[in-house]
Length: 361
Length: 274
Image (cartoon, rainbow over all chains, first blue to last red; front, side, top):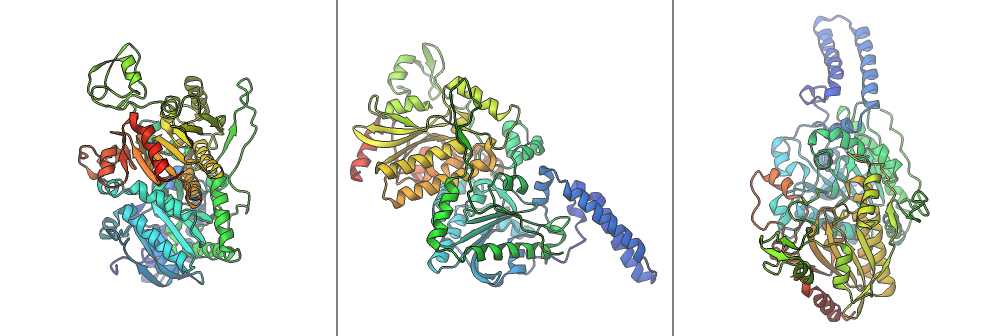
C-alpha cells in the first residue's frame, strides 16, 4: 500500500493521461511549467507571461469543463488520475480502522470498509476502490466487486447499525464483476439482499458517487437517506458502451447513449433521483484532489448533521417513503385520448433537492 | 447488466403453423399437443416462454384472477430516444400485445388458496423493469400485507429497462424495500423464476423470496453471458446460469416442471400455514 503514489504529487504530470479535449489545456500547463523552471535557472522574470498564460488556462478550463458533453463527463469520471476511495480515506479520515472479510469466503478488495473519524463524526465508511497502481488494480478488479464484497459491506453496515454509527458510502465502480465465480457465489442474490437490508437499516446512511456509478454494482451499496453525485461523476443503469451495443448495435455510439441515458449529475438532480451535486474544482477532481476532498467532506458533514436530529425510526420511515415514491408513470385513460394524464408521481416530497456551493478554492 | 437475453436463442412464443419444430430437440410437434401440454415439449421437456395472460390462466383456478393497476403506463421520464423514440416503442407494443406494461398483478386463487400474484411478460421489452413494473411489484407486496395473503411472483425479465435510465435502476431498491415490508409483516413470498430471470430483476425482488422455485432450463443470472465471456476471455461452462446451475450452487430451492407449479405453490402455502 505504501507504494501507492500520493495524490497531490503528480499535479501537472498527467500528460500521458490526457483526454482529447484536455490537450490544449495540457499544452498551456506545460508551458507554465517550462517558464517557471527556466525562470529559476536563468534568473529572469517571466511573471507577466506566466500570468497571462494562467489566465488563458483558466479561461480554457472554464470553456472545456463548462460545456462537457455527457460522454466527456463519463471520461472525466474515469480519469486515471481521479482521486479514489483510498485517496479520500487518506485525505479526510482520521484513525481509519479497516475491517476485512465477509465471514463466508473472502476479503474482496474491490470494496473497502472500516470505522473512521470523518467530518467530525465516528462513521462506518464503505466504498469501492478501483486501485491506483497495476497491482492494486488487479487485486481490486478495477473496482468491480464480487458477491463477497457486497456481503462484506453488509456485515460492516450491520455492525454500524448495532453500534449506532452512521454509514458513509462512496461509490466508484463500472459495475459488479461479470465472471463465472461471481455468478456461482450468487452476485444477484448478494446485491438483492443489500438493497433489502439497506432499506431498513436502523442507522443514517449517506452515499456519494465519487466516480463511476455503474448500475446494480453501484446501487448495491448506495441505498441511502441522502444521495449525492460529484460534479463530473456519473450514475447510470448501464454503461454507455453497453447501452449503445444493445440499442444502436455498436459500442461506437456510446456518446449518443451517454446523452440519452441522462446520467449526468444535473440530469439526475432534475429528475429528483439525487439530492445534491458535490462540486469539483475547475478542471475536475484530478486537477485538485485536496479541494475535491474538502467539498466531499463538507457535503458528508452537512448531510450527517441533518440526520442527527430525527429519531432513527423517522429516518427509516422516510427512507422507505422516498424509495416508494420513485418513479414516473400515469394511468392511461380512454384510448381515444391517450395524452390525458390522470396521475403522475415524482419521487420526492421533501426535503427539496439542492446543490451545495463550492468551497473556496 | 441490463443486457437483454437474445430472443433468437429461444423464441418468445410458439411459431405459427399446425406443426412446430421444437427449439429444444428439433422434433416436429403437433401444435395442439404443445398447447395442451402447457407449451412444454412433450418429447424433451423444453419449456417455451409464455406470455403473462397464458401463465395466469395456467396457474390460477378458472376465472378467479382479478387484475389491479392494469392501466399504469410509463411517462417516459427521460424522453428517451434510440433508433426509435421510447414513447413510440411503447405505443407500438401496446397495440401489438394488448398489454400496457411488462407485468400483470392481481388477486387470484391457486387450488382454492387466495394469493396476490405478479406475472412478468417477456413480450413487453423482454419483461424489463421500469417505473411501472417497480410500482406494481411494490403495490402487490403492499396488497399482500394489507390482505394478509401470500405473494407469488413469476419472474421473467432481462433486467432494468434502459429507456428509463436511473429511474429503472432505483426500482430495484424500491421493490426490495417493499419486499422487506412484507417480510417484516410475516408475509409469505414465493418466487417462480422462469426463462429468463436476469440482471436488475434477479438482483432485486426475484432473489428475495422466502422460497424460490424455477422452471427447468430457465436462464438465471446477473451479468449477460456475452459480457462474462468477454471478461474471462474463454467460453462459458456448459449449463452456466441455468436453473440447474443455480440449484447446484445453492441459490434456489427447487426446480419445478410447469405442470407441477400449481401444486408446489399450494403445498408451500399450506406448510407455511398461510
